[in-house]
Image (tube, one colour):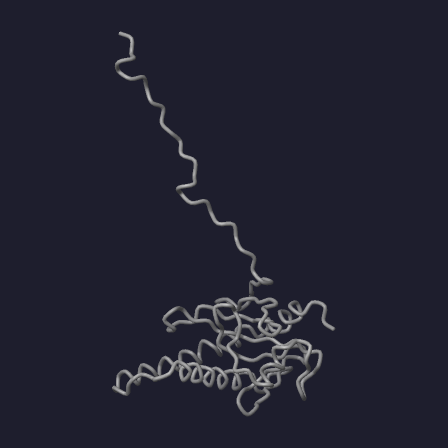
Length: 205
């Protein structure tokens, strides 16, 4: 049993951070280009948000598959409805859209439940591999990628995560984040009162 799965994942994926982040950014840019084409040709927007999510996943999966095929130590595992990537038989990952809790959005199937259960082995996959999701999170209006995260979970519980940043060479992360002590509000800051001189009536001539 891996006693420090986060360290294993970071060490294994670090040489591939730029490719992982690039697959997401390029896939997202592809969907935006298609949207631009639709607008310019009066084709109308997509009707359902899930269609956008599916299109982004499809583009990211294609980009990642072509990026990692033939890379030493990396196996691309195509399945009926998804694709997984196995790195050095140590890390098994899949791409997902993230929510506000830094968890991937999943349809509750037996396959998805098995993936997010760290104690459950997947058929044909190395039992020692740490399972993680690589998530993309967008801004409020959904037109820009704000974060790319590597996330470990146990069911609906977040275990730990770290972010693959712009430089993609280093990553910062944390176990479930603790609330920060808020900075004191301006109204709570002590005020220095100016000295007030004696009233005119009190002054001695």
